[in-house]
Amino acid sequence: MQTDFMSSGQSWYETGIAAPPECPALAGEHRCDVVVVGGGFTGLSAAFHLAAAGVGVVVLEERRFGAGASGRNGGQLGTGQRQWVEELEKTYGFERAKALFDLAESAKPYFMDFARTAGIDMEYRSGQMSLVHKPRLLDSYRRHVDAMRRYGYEHLHFMEHDETAARLGSKRYFGGLRDMGTGHIHPLKLVLGTARAADEAGAKLYENTRVVSIEGEEGAIRVKTAHGAVTATRALIATNGYGGALEPMSAARVLPIRSFIGATEPLAADSAILRGGEAVDDSRFVVRYFRKSADNRLLFGGSEAYGHGAADMEAPLRKQMLEIYPELENIRFTHIWGGTLGITVQRLPFVRDVRRGVTFCGGYSGHGVLLSHFFGRLYAEALSGRPDRLAVMKELKISRFPGGILRSSLLFAAMHWFALRDRF
Ligand SMILES: Cc1cc2nc3c(=O)[nH]c(=O)nc-3n(C[C@H](O)[C@H](O)[C@H](O)COP(=O)(O)OP(=O)(O)OC[C@H]3O[C@@H](n4cnc5c(N)ncnc54)[C@H](O)[C@@H]3O)c2cc1C
Image 1 (tube, rainbow, N blue to C red):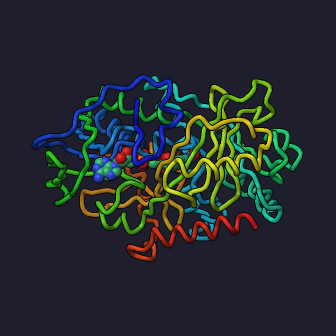
Image 2 (tube, helix red, strand yellow):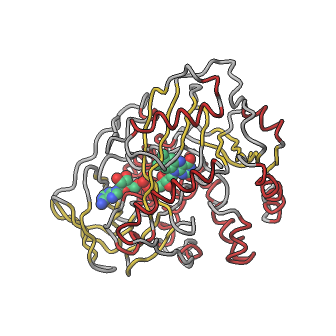
Image 3 (cartoon, rainbow, N blue to C red):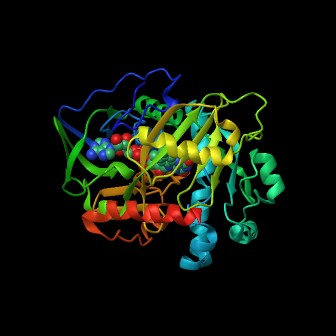
């Protein structure tokens, strides 16, 4: 299996996975009920659920399934929305904040049930720790446990410094939260398993097929590719951080940023690092995230602020990892890879009918492992005449990023600024 693209490096996830048969590229004229652009969690999940409900669906993927963020990410599910409930409540009040939190939480049982029913071993392991890199943040983390109880969430526990150090195998962080109501997965296994399930349910899947334009409205949507076209009643744009200028409303609101992960050689069996098997993220704006793989490697993810190719990332990732685990000095990274995610100003997903019959679903802002697969399912559900549970997301105001064509450069500068602020 080779999903390597844009010099982002082959991921450790690709090793040991049998290459799935390549789907054909689209050629000629086709018709269907729903055309899905993008073959990651969002698009493939929507395709599976639509096809299973008897809807005629075509998926068009520019590269291979799993070549986008869904096959290359940190695998951490997290809890609720990306924004903490305290922030949500300040903006939307308790009722709406609770609706947003509950919607995201209902992704968890869905997720486990989907994988079980589809026979996908996504290597789920429970436990996630969110750690504090500056003492002044400790109080807000402590208070977060109580805030979450008000939302009915009982799986969080505040850890003082000693417990944090014991579980982490490092004294580097000042304290943090341990969440046993969530966990982490092997993301590529989930994407490929979802593609297989969609195929078996009757979805028509195409790879190496870049969509160049989407025209028309409900009932007569025409999606063009280099060598063909699909005419459909509806379209789902599931391109997240990779969509470029394909659709202007989402392009103005979903900003692509790069993130990178390094996989070490397997650690010693008696290593003190993350003995409980939890995944970790931290309180930095430019977040660091890491966990151990099933074969005892450290998968260490970090900064989006530097470089564009995986090769540029070895030194900064290594430096960040050694700050936490200096004893890994002589351990090599065997794989380094990157991917692109889509973020929004509000750090909440952008879900919108961008025109009649054309829906965009993305901008998960680093929280898409839990949400994107579920949102694909909710999109399919609403089309099958069930209540539109995504309505609460569609109502959210998601601002445009300032800066026009300069916005990527501005963000790059801003990320440097935040990385510096995280340090000092
Ligand atoms: C390195 C990294 C680490 C991450 N870690 C985490 C994490 O630990 N936890 C978490 O919750 N989230 C994480 N994320 C984010 C998460 O992976 C995404 O939110 C999620 O996978 C989005 O899924 P998606 O299907 O919407 O988009 P993607 O998986 O990105 O899929 C979009 C697809 O659209 C295709 N496409 C784009 N344009 C076109 C076109 N014109 N024609 C046809 N196809 C097109 C792309 O090739 C791509 O395959 C991470 C992301 C990265 C990159």
